[in-house]
Image (tube, rainbow, N blue to C red; front, side, top):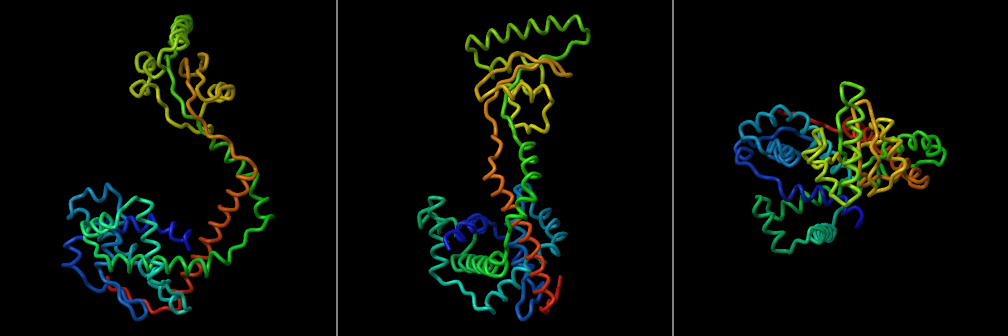
Length: 319
């Protein structure tokens, strides 16, 4: 059960911090009937509110409501699916005890170092009363219990299925290898005879690097591309996006190394390798393939489950 509760942490934290709206109260009405239960507009609004991006939350309330209005049907379908799962979970005898909810809340407070007082203050500040919060949390635990029983427990991934996917995943994994690096870049001259002057400048830079000068400061001072403003920082770059000259150079480097100057079609580069993601071992690849196949099967079974629940249910939309 503890693993299940940890899965819920992100969801629960979002629920803690959603902002209630006066408009939701004013416009509250029944927007759907699912078997014998109703879904109100305020429930729909709350769901759209806590799933909205920071950019969306920064909009004026009038503009945000317009966007929500356009997305009401999509989010209502999600709420209907949730309600159907809760109803079916109760029908087959699943239940969430007060102790289950308490343990989930304790895990959240422990993970985010919240005292009882701080936890209550967060709920109160965001307009979420404790009983409503516990009900939302209880529903989510129940849905996860239901999916564990009806979907996850029935997923089997065979060794043959894994073997069939390993090579393709290994190739993709190698292509996803990434390098975090900085560079000092000197533009390629228009005239070939001028290349020697560029190489001489690079040699002087290398002398300063080897004497212990800070690479990022040298990049900021001397590099001739946009990364100079960030001290030559290129961030993580996937191997599949790098020019062959970079790959050849990086293959001989370890984190902390600075390369000798090398040419590409664009110009002359000096790079410092700061970090790299190592290719996965075979055991890691097999485990990743298993997770990937499990996720695919879960998505298929979940879609089939929801389709079946909807076909057996009475659903009335009142948007």
